[in-house]
Image (cartoon, rainbow, N blue to C red):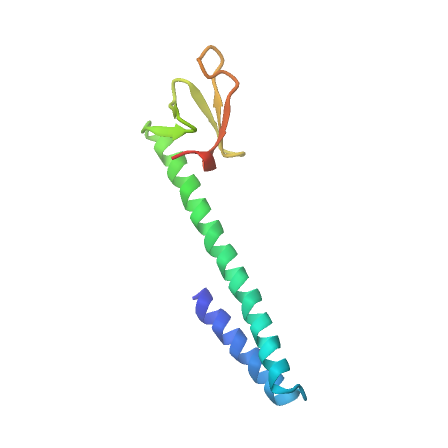
Length: 109
């Protein structure tokens, strides 16, 4: 849906500068290309954030299900780590071999 909306906005932008400005063809093409790059960057950023959110959600679900999670070659589990959902971080429990160590969900597989 986002791609269709982005394409529609680019078409409307091009139509507006084509019919309502006195720019030459190169200027119109340059303005449209610039606009397309801005829209493309926004769509890419949105896609990247969605992928990141899905990864974080999958890591949180694995931790809740007590499945194997590896963060920087360290096995993260409920015995040795707690989960901070607000910061999406695993924190080593006191008394465990990993006391005080912290791993962001993004670092984990």
